[in-house]
Length: 307
Image (cartoon, rainbow, N blue to C red; front, side, top):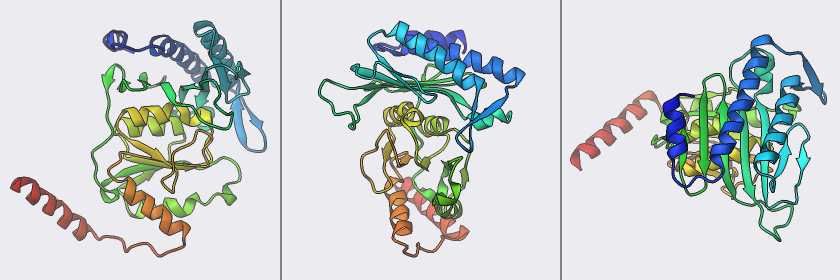
């Protein structure tokens, strides 16, 4: 990260947790870069889920660093860390989101850390608000951060979701599970969205997909069966950048998410309609032709000139 970006981050007024958390994420990312440059052996947790020494080493570092920096906080990690979970604040950490990419030498993975506020009396099955988020891509040296009510930043610069108004003009993203793919219905949605958009990307890191929605690189993202360490940081980034996250039925999003839909808000209602039609096994509206899209763009330009 450049010294200019560091200075912008440090000068951002009112940040409570981000300066320390961002430094921890950058150090974790440096460890991932080192492992990546030398290559690592893979193991399996369960039948098909890959894990590497990098996942475990970096999670141990994150646990120790966060508990040192924030001694009253708890930590909940993908690789088994469960410390001080009765604390008022809880970090959800993924030391290496995109492990399969990492293990295959595909350069798309990140460190993800989201901080949940769990006030006294909150039932364990209930979510508290996410109040801080850090996602760090160590190969691109891109640091995404947010605190609730203070906006979202990429390398010290404010970011916003895109202004693309409809799916037909959008680039969207999704993911597929490494296990039980034959039981996952996402291929049906993948086909529907591929046919109705500029394209669907499946890059293999849900945290980065959400960060990319936040900064406008993609316009929407959906996935089934994600975990709190996958989503906590990304949820806050999208919301602080002006986006929206719900379930496929429009319900409020959950950290322990069976389903999430993130978008720039402008096309959210359209996307929910497609999900509703597919789940109800209703026929989708006919695909617009290239001429239809051209006519819509021309009509918009005419309307803008008339204003």
